[in-house]
Length: 225
Image (tube, rainbow, N blue to C red):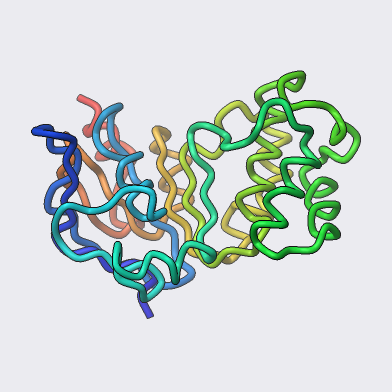
């Protein structure tokens, strides 16, 4: 079964075309990596898939549900790690995750488990505004996987993380997690290593689409010229 099925997806902001004619299929358990310069449409694509933006044209199916008509059926099965952490700065890490746990009907034991897995259990009682951006990113990762989603949408997931943190979080959001993933990346080498399927966007339109095994880092770099 395909986790994603896009046919002619379009989205605009007023007269500006943010996405146009995006079509692809992604089987369950595979990883799509999306490349493109700033403003190419990567974040807009993630927000459409996350049900935060309505498509203006084409057909979009996520985990078998048609968007936007069946968005209600899929929201709880998606985990989003956005460019902004989607956390409350005045709350502690534990308070943020417990709030999310209540929304998803998840027990607090899962919060404790994740705080330990992301190595934030020792700082979990401090307001987020007092923590480094890398620490906040660890909590944001915990938030994204708290409810055991089938699909992970990850916008530059390694931003602000040192190599040790990237390795620590790999079990949760890396290939070993076994989930279907869509990753927005600017790193051709690392992105290709993660990908099964690659989409390259230029001004909202597909400029590159293919199996990662058939592509080179040089082809990805060409999207930024």
